[in-house]
Structure formats: C-alpha cells, structure tokens
Length: 181
Image (tube, rainbow, N blue to C red; front, top):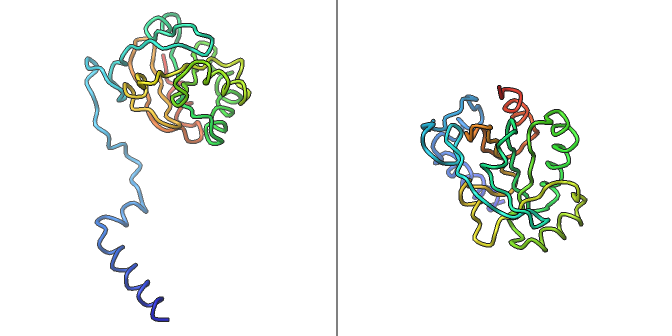
C-alpha cells in the first residue's frame, strides 16, 4: 500500500512538473514549422531539394535531377524492411501509386548499405518489381533529407520539396500529390 501511495504522489508530481503537458492532449492542428526560402537548398517543404546520385538495386545510377525530367514528382520512402515499412509500402503500392502514373515512387533502403544486400532484402520482401534505391554506407541521402524509417518525401518537377514527414495513413501524401499542378 505504501508503494502505491508513493507511486501516485510521484506520478502527480512528475506530471505537474511537465510544462504544457495538457496542451498536448488538445493540439491546435496548426503546422508550427518554420517556412523556408524557395531559393535555399534543404529538406524542408518549400526548399529546393539537394541533388544526389545513388545506385538502385539493379546497379543503375539514380540521379535526382535527371529523374525529375518528365515526371510530375518523385516520392521517396525510407525503408528498413520492417513490418511497419512493409505495411506503408503495401498501402502505397495498392492505394496510391496506381492513381498517379506520372509520379515516380521510389523506396530507399537506408540500412543495407550495399546493392547486393538491398537487392536480397527487396526480393525477400516481395518488392522485386519496385524500384529500390540504395543509400550508400555514408548515408548521403539520409543525411541530405534527414530521413529515417517511414520518412516520406515528395519533390515536384521543379525540384521543390513539397512534403517531408513520416508516413502515417497516406492521407497527407494523397493531399500533396492531388495538389501538384
């Protein structure tokens, strides 16, 4: 009984010391992130996407600036082949990709570090027909775009980052893609 009282007192003290704790229970829904100049390079929405070159799992070179030519946009999804990533990618392949034939959807393996290892993971997970990019051991793209598991980035054909956030249920991605002119 003494432990229960101690736990309750400690919990009340701990929660009351957290500033603005109750604000988190009723979020405003406003995007409070800073806006960035269209002339600056970076990974934030509104910035110009930094160019990069990596290999895909078939040893073809992927250069962002070249791939943007003739596309409405490019969607990069950072995967580590876990069940959560699989559910996101399955949802994209079945519900989103078919709706946007002029958008290139690319899965970026940022954990394998080698084309052969990434290709094996791609095939083992049933993504043999999808284009998978391999971030090198130096994590060039991961660092350029601040990517991690589930990060989803949309870059329009002008090279502007339109979205950079974790994949949730696909609604935000659909909203962004539907608003590309």
